[in-house]
Length: 176
Ligand code: S3P
Image (cartoon, rainbow, N blue to C red):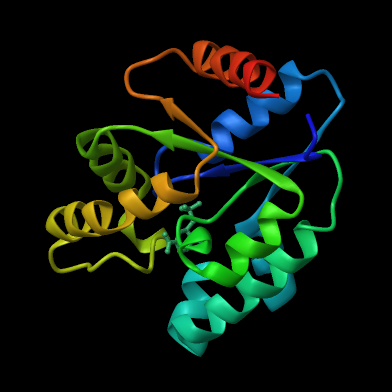
């Protein structure tokens, strides 16, 4: 693989963190896993909902830019990217220096179910008054943008996690 890291991108709830963790395991210690949101929380010393409520979304997005710059210098990492990170051109430019972009896609229904199950309070970008419609609108707005920057697109709907991981590994081999 010419680029040394793997960026998992896509909408909230598609499984970037779950699949990223399993992918690293399957790759057998060759790669390390990192979650962008965790780095942002460490940098801010508070949770993402707290950053949004106390400092505002702009402040969160600035931290996100810093974290993208930082992880783009890492080698041999699988990075779970926050759902909004690759909507910013600066972040795409930074991450593309070292990462191959893998988009995970599921249906909107799956995303809605997962987000509601996990609790909308941990997803500050979603409108609490009408979460289902908000998720649908955001998905339609964002998914074409994810597709436009993706190197590889994986259909992650209704598939066993291990099958998704195997597909990623297979496509990485084929594409490089
Ligand atoms: C966001 C997605 C979240 C997190 C933040 C904003 C977004 O990450 O970065 O709440 O704008 O889509 P996940 O995609 O990991 O949930």
